[in-house]
Length: 227
Image (cartoon, rainbow, N blue to C red; front, top):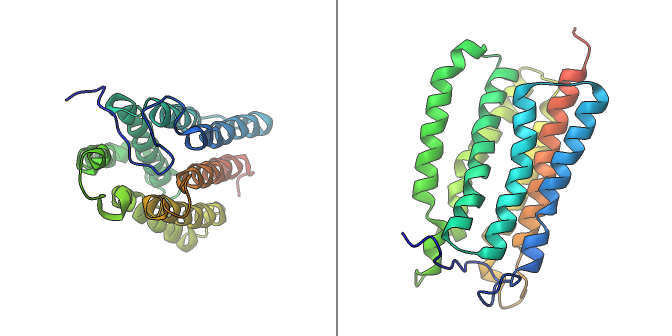
């Protein structure tokens, strides 16, 4: 594979220049803000945990990786974009299984293997960069790769509601935000003729909000007094 091969799959990019996607690139600050606010909130409320720290760090890495992809726009930067995203999703699913589903840490080993396998399969099957050389755009503009994430969030929303988890409102809000953001990602290429900058930057902004909601919910859940 040619790791330096250009990837051009968004409305805003009209050349191979580094700053050809300024709005898509700078909108990734949403992830950095989400990570920073979560860190500040956790510190203020005295909430700690390896899993929470990992999610906060990964949230920041999602923003950095996506910034690299929307500036360098090639195969290696695409990988820098995709890996943090799916690592965040995998860790989030495991944390949710434990914190919301009530599964003990010792029983998470099999779940971790399953989540990792699904993550690898989705990453390999997504082929987002193939759109750069394909005569036709991928189905749903490549958004189909996020179907497992949508399903997982809906499942955890229902579990949270069924178990009357205090975090349920945050999960429902995050799920709704993610579905809306996915819609904006999906229509990006379809609106190029009428919206030159495209709608991908809205995907970034809303996903930053979605991650912020999930992290805030986890922090405040742990900050609640027992009972």
